[in-house]
Each structure stands twice: as C-alpha cells, then as structure tokens.
Image 1 (cartoon, protein in one colour):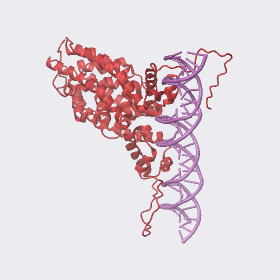
Image 2 (cartoon, rainbow over the protein chains, first blue to last red):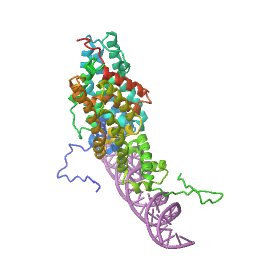
Image 3 (cartoon, rainbow over the protein chains, first blue to last red):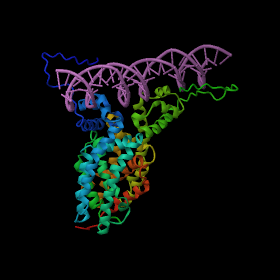
Image 4 (spheres, chains in turn yellow, blue, green, purple):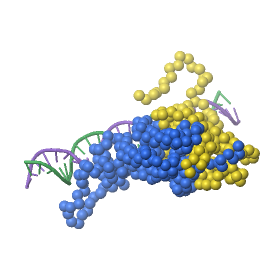
Length: 221
Length: 221
DNA sequence: ACTATAACTGACTTTTTGGTCATTAATCCT
DNA sequence: AGGATTAATGACCAAAAAGTCAGTTATAGT
C-alpha cells in the first residue's frame, strides 16, 4: 500500500533531480494549488496533502512557508483581492458621463471579477465557513467588502449630486446594487449543475434591472 | 478530563429517571438540535456528539432515528422548507391588485422567511458545502429553489399580461427579483459582526429598487 | 572537491469524530 | 409481580487528516 518509490533506473543520470530548491517560487505555487483545492472542497474539506501533491511538493514543505491552513488561505486572499479592487476603483474616479453609463461600465466588471478568477471561491468560503473562522471573515471584510462598499457609495453620491439617482431606500444602501452579481456567483457555484443559467443572462438582467427598473413607470399607481 | 458523571445522591428517589423512552418526540427534537448546531458550525463542522448533548440524549440514539449525518440534514430540509413555500404561494394565486402591490406583499415575506427561521442556515450550507455533498444540493434545488423560481415566474407572467412589467432582460430572469433578499441573508450570517446592517434596511432598499427602480426615469439619456 | 547550509521529504504522532454494538433500564403486557 | 420488548446509552473502533521532525540531498561558498 505504501508507495516506496524505489527507482529502478536502467542507468544513472545526474540530471533531473527529484528535489529542487526554489525558495522564491514556492509560496505563489502553494497559494495557487491551495486555491484550486479550496475551490473544489471548501476550507475545512481541503487536505494539505492534496495541496502539496498539486504543487508538486511534499506536505511538510507547506509548513515551511505557511504557519497553518488558515495562514495559507489568508495569504491567498491578500494576493488575489488587492489588485482586483484597485482596478475597478480606477473606473469611478474622474468618469465624465452620466451615471447610467458608469453603471453599464462597472457592473460587467463586477460580474467578471466575481464569477471568474478566484474571488468567487473566497466568497463561497466566507459564506459557508466564515462563522467557524472569524479571523478570516474580519480580514475579508476589511480587504474586500469594505472597499467594494466605498466604491458603490461613491457612485451613488456622484449620481445624486448630478440628479440622476432617485432619492429613496435603494440609494441609502448602495450595497444592494451588486446583489444580482452575488446571486450569479452563488448560482454558478451551487446550482449550475442542477439548472445551468449562463452568467451573461444574470449580467443582462442585472444591467436591465438597475438601469431601467422592473416596472413600467407609473403603472398601477 | 473525561467526565465520569458519578451521581452522589444523598437519597435514592425512584422518580426522575435518567433515561426516558420517547420514540415519537425524538426525531423532531434531534432535527431542532441539529439545525442549531448546523447553523453554528456548518455541515462538516457539526459533531453529532454536540447535537446529541443539545437534544439531551446520547450520540448513539441519533442513529436509532437517522441513517447518518446526511439523512439528518435532509430530514431537516424537508420539515422546514415545505410549509414555508406553500404559504408564500398562497399569496400569488388569485391576487387581484396591481403587480406593484403584489410585490410589496411578497417581498417582505421572502425576507422574513430567508432571514429568520432555519432557512438561512440551509442556504448557507448549500452555498458553502453543496459541492461536497451533491445529494444535498439536488434535494434543496428540487424542494426549495425550483418552487421559488416558479413562484417568481408566475408573478412576472401575470404582470406582463397586465402590461405592468417592462419587457427586458430583468423580466426574462425573474430570479434576480429576489437577489437583494439573498444578499441580506448572507450579510446577516457573515458580516453582521463586522458591520451590522439591520434586515429592515435591506428590505426597504429591496422594495424600493424593485418597485421604483434606481435611476430617475429618462435621466441622462 | 568538499564542506556547510538549509530546502525538502514523508513516515509518524496526535487529534478528532463518524459510526458500532454489547449492555442497561424504562415501559408494556399478561 | 415479573418477564418480554426495545429505547437508550456510552465505551470503543476505525478512518481521516492536521501537524511534527529526524533524516536526506540540492546548492552555495571556499
């Protein structure tokens, strides 16, 4: 049962060493492998053994670079989330046109970021296992959610100043603007297999709902 | 370390037996205790030992009534979800007024059901651990999500027929109507501790967004 | 070359927990 | 009352996986 890895080489070649020392490359490789496993099995369900195999190293090597499983996950959050938020923020500052156009620019990016890339994995783990690991949640809130909220609040403040956004409860909680994007991410992760709905349909519905509204203006009033 | 539970009674009373035989009451009690633990620790994280203690029984007793952990969870889904959906469906059929009023009636119920009660626990477990337990996801989709979709589709079809709902991508994916409610449930479960936002604010924003839209009609066009 | 360093390994230890089952005792039946 | 039934118990078992560490070997320095 136990793999003994006896190498029955017909000739000894000094090339192709079984081990390689690559102190610099390891952390990023371990994070990448970790995210793939986390995406597949969640936080608690991920075995470091599998992360190691995926990264092409031994389990012990992970502990050379990361304190424990939680540290590994936190490192992944740091590495992935930071750049994504900054990129989106670039759109908002100094945008000249009407709010409708700004939203049509920002919302697709939101979907892209949330559905593809590793962000949806992190989101899923936060939702599903955040309460078990409060440290992870706090970090994620500070580094991602809060930045996102600020972004949306800036959009709404700008729109209000230009008289393009209705006063009302929706404008008082800009967070709800991104609800359909979150729903899309959840759907892709959870129910895609039961009832596939392409992300583009969510995106189209999202844009339509936010920029045009659901009801015919003044209908049934 | 190990609790020995030696009872040093000063007098022997034949009353108050340590064991009680209550075949009928057990399943519901175990389900209730299970949901509380699931809410606290997720599916994988829940220890049957803790469920037993909360239900005031021994671990072995659980296995008298449920095949295994997964069966327990499925039983909980069945017991909780069925009645909730039926109740909501009652509103839609035969509602006489305009769509705006129907939505104002249905959306608050959605929030109530999703945020309070055990439904949000089930939702969270589906999101976080669904991919690890495909059987659970399939059951949940059939018994809850699908019914919810049908309900929303009926509302939209009715509203279209009455000329009260705009044609467009949002109406083509009625699912997005409930996105803010889901977001609220997630927020309460995940980030309440980091940045509390009362469910009523989500509800108000939701109603406002869906019935009035975000933008001033024809602004910036 | 050859020695020192530390990156790397994987078998082992420890902990945790789902699930089992021989034993105990509450309750029913006659 | 006391015998039969079966609900209930909790010590135990086995599996799984996190985390450790003594030993191995690639690589840099001399």
